[in-house]
Amino acid sequence: MKNIKKHIRKGLGLLLIIPVMILFELGLSSCSADEIEIQQNFPFELQVMPIPKDIANGETIEIRLKIIPIKNYSETQYYLRYFQFDGDGILQYFEDPPYLPNDSYQLTQKEFRLYYTSKSTVSQSFDVWIYDSFGNEKQISFQLNSKD
Image 1: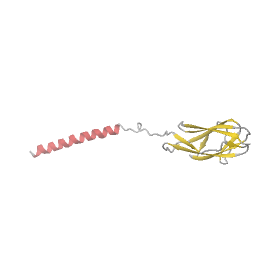
Image 2 (image 1 turned 45 degrees about the vertical axis):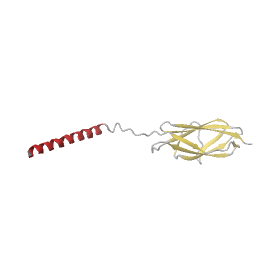
Image 3 (image 1 turned 30 degrees about the vertical axis):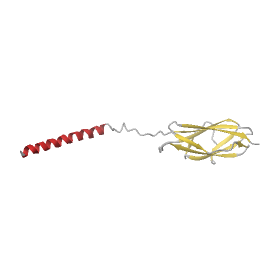
Image 4 (image 1 turned 90 degrees about the horizontal axis):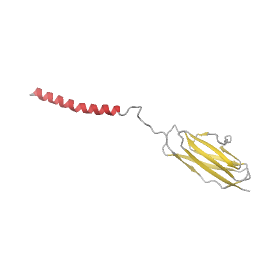
């Protein structure tokens, strides 16, 4: 009788171990490294502080911008490009050389200041595009009246 009970316990133990092993194997096979998807592409918003409406020839105004991503991914790179379609002026980052229209410039910080210097006696309009390494893009339009 003892032998029968011993064999029954051994059989029940195997019956309990087998489903656990099957579930473990299914868990491993459904989570292969090739199928793990890590999200890297996060849209962002732009915060732009107000600027003056009027500018005189030779005057410089400060434009404060802040990139606010929905979530952060450390490898995301941000870039800036601009195009001036009315008037004439210079856009630059601190004392860096002026930006050239339609060229891309990498941004090293998410919060930064641009400086626009008027080189014109007429109204001026230009657009700035901020975009990231995943193709997300925001456009900001600036229109400044001539101040005489």
